[in-house]
Image 1 (tube, rainbow, N blue to C red):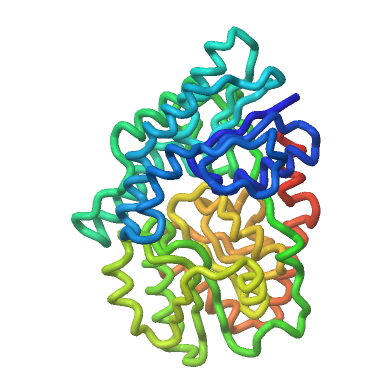
Image 2: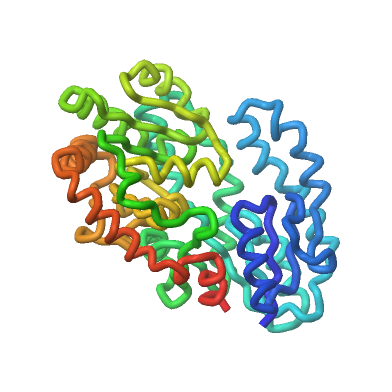
Length: 377
């Protein structure tokens, strides 16, 4: 089997392509991002899309970059439609929104080529609904930066695909709830880099409550509920800390102005993976109260380090964890987050035991990027 991967940007696809190459089943990769080590004969850079987006990568406000990412789809489409599929391709795999022109090539080839839609998040209808609902409540007037035509395009891609690759049980449920056949869905979650994220020692556990969340600050990830819970926690545990890593998205900017003065709430922005791994190891527990997610790679990274997990089903956590190995909380429930954090503050022994269970659920080499690709093959 030979797989062609194509997408507007790499996201995690550079890791999946590299793993496919190691397994001997990569036909090629088409992407606008830089080559991260693939053989030159198997890599093509989508220059029109890259150059069209270049003015928005660093200088433009975040909301404009996000909007232009989708408005520039036509540059990606034009480039792909001028290509020919390699002769050895058996499978084309693309992330949501990037499938259309590649599926066109596959269908026009006259060959039997499996078309795979990789769902980065839940079904477009579900993702759009949750995101806009939270924005309406907490960021009035904000409109999510994905236009109607893009949502329609994603729906058509799902319909055309032979297989929908779902990174979590939540994503699969959202697909089925929106009319996608269960037989069409394949559950295969993302991986973690165990050369960077490895188990901490028991003595690394802090002596005071120190919680961490990673990923962009956005209403879709539920930071607004976490901050409410933490504000209440600090009243009971004045030495508690919450460390937030990630950029502030446009839908959360006004909310952050409200919360940035909260005692012991620290925002660090984005950091290198090596530094993030070090910071994870120094914390009490990892929290992810997402209202809509695909499968948060940060979950696996925290599990690989051996942190207790407090997360929602919608974050993808229940793909590997349950109520015995983590604290699975309802979405949009600040009180549930508070009590889960308080339980760990009151019981230091539980911090170690839940961390051990999270690490066991991680499963070491069974949840790396290489394992993800073996399962896909």
